[in-house]
Image 1 (cartoon, rainbow, N blue to C red):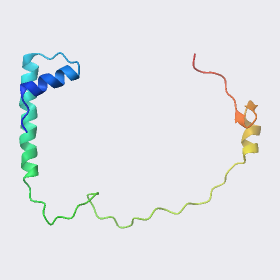
Image 2: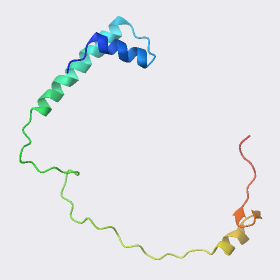
Image 3: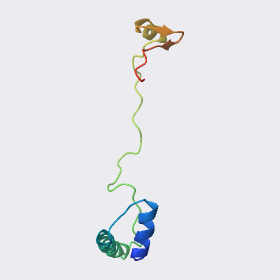
Image 4: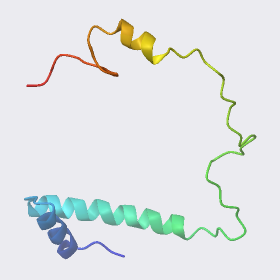
Length: 96
């Protein structure tokens, strides 16, 4: 696919941009250069190449074990709060 001025003008309108003709031509030049580079990448034969989700072999796909931690009770937390309303900690309003 080639990028042309018609496509750039449509994109310019959709993005509500006001680009000069010189800017459009520069964008057109760079975009077509990028597309040429991608054509080289897409021309690489990847048949018989295993698909990888990571660039390296994964030695272990297991997650770590959850360690039991010291958890404070709700009553301890509420007793340390400056002000509460039932089971909730209340704070002063900080947004106007």
